[in-house]
Image (tube, rainbow, N blue to C red; front, side):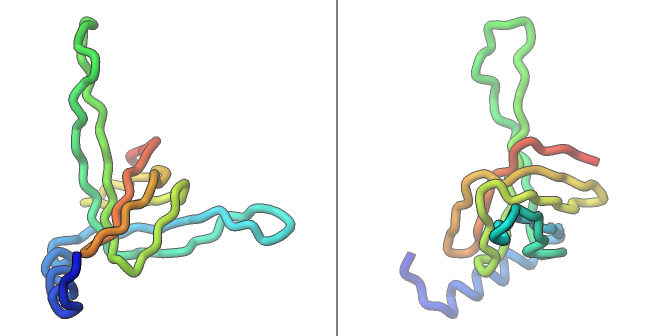
Length: 118
């Protein structure tokens, strides 16, 4: 998208004004001798959304829908596949691994897999 920088910043501000979640991102880093987990972002503003995916096979006795969690963050936040992400959303904690990141004009997004809720 080829928009003026001022327009992009204005749109990002409007979108992010609706966000009220926070997240911490932990990444596995190779320090030369071994792998270690390192917090790369802490308590960043984000938006966690949930979508239920329709069942692929409805032939069985019960069709089960699968939840799909998507995390939106600012474009200055660079997420990587397999990052460990813990998001706080309205009093609940959602933890999962980042899928393939998608960097967009107004936000970066990633789907979370293996999500646990506490």
